Length: 173
Image (tube, rainbow, N blue to C red; front, side, top):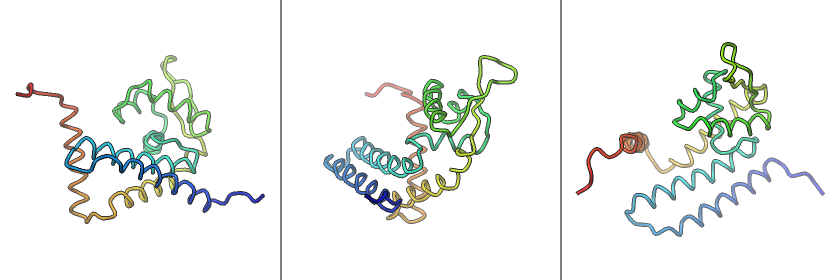
């Protein structure tokens, strides 16, 4: 029995992602924003999980890694604020990342209640490959969009985020 090659693993993961994305296509295609947004978000999550799992990174952990690549030694609370997450979410994710050898926890120099998250050599070494996977996912997701449409999509997503974060200013009539 021969060992699975990385090409075989990629093909298997891509086939699984394709099957899962097709299953998501059963959602009625109309002008329903929430259904369309959910389907796109789900398809991106499935494709991301397939791409990052090849490198031992679980979906969502790439954003924690990006924070630490930019500024190694952050506390879980600092990472949480930068990503708009609860500290407990980051703490759980980084515990899993520590078990996978991506980060290590070090006691904070001045506050014993805190820990600093430090990249391991393995965590540092993944920067180029994870950045490449993220670029490929972006290209795949936006393949049919021109430069202006890509900018408009990103601007619209930021506007949606601001609208939802602002909450309701007035009650609907």
